[in-house]
Picture 1 (cartoon, helix red, strand yellow):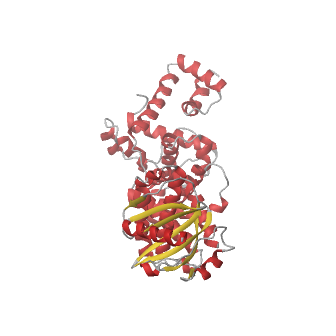
Picture 2 (spheres, each protein chain N blue to C red):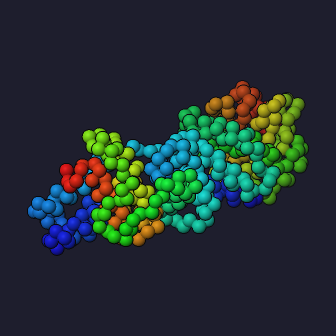
Picture 3 (spheres, chains in turn blue, orange):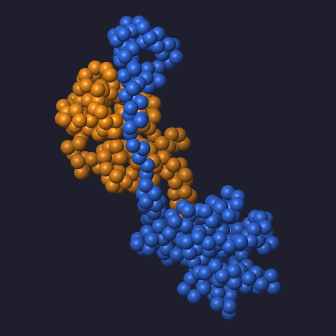
Length: 253
Length: 179
């Protein structure tokens, strides 16, 4: 295999690293000696180098990523029950907010562990999704004797569904949502025109007790017994702190 | 709770497929030669991929997405720029035959010799089957088997297209012969 007519048709495969080692060695020997094939191979290598040097690196713009995630949501929603479908413009606006809130992520890092970050991001996403369409509540009631039995059998967590209407935080209902791949109860409260979603997960034992704010969304988490609470809202951070205080006072009492 | 299943499916899709969005965008960008058109094509391709996602089997998600992006790019070109899709002559012959004369603009080439950046323009003037072969090989760094998979042709055709693409680029880039 040292004839030029055998070597030339294999030069592309040679520079592309597609030849088996034995064949590759034969070609290498030939190229070292041959005044025709050697420069030919060198020219191919140079072209390969020039292309990689000069070609622009195209990357998908961030806006396209957001657009695609949004389009996927719509696509997924189209095969879900009609009640879940959101008006287009509202969903789009929310998807931008979501991209900003989750994508920037800096403050969420304060929560520390990666798992907690993921939960925080999912909690914010679920909060946004609950605002998108008609699916704020699966069970609309301020009566814990209605809400608690509704969750029984749907989730193995039984949230304390207390109404705080007397303190300006009326309970409007409950919803089954998905966090970390598991169905979890979410209690829905109102604060004037704002919604507070309170997600109930197993306690995480992490003794963090802090407020995270990002682009108008506020997140607080706390543990009580073997339940972990994640509250998220677009109301002011101080109102969420107040909500937590009232909620804990009632559920303790 | 179909929406929970639907949401799981979407979240799995985003985990498996979206990491390859840059690769998909780059291919669409080379084929459409335009940012806005590439974005439209990639979005459409992702929705198609999502619909076909049940047919995706664990394996090479990147090749799978590229294949769909490529198909979508060609559909888009057919609708919007059919003139781009002149069929390749002498497809079967693996020699170094020149691409169709119209595909490479000689004047543009003459001016471009000393300007490395103009090499991109030369790549863009290649007919799409040669262009995608060179882009997938040199920029996406796929091997022959993967290129064959993405473009849906036998490996022998991949080799002849790469050879033709390089011959055309070298002719235009360096003048006849080797540099």
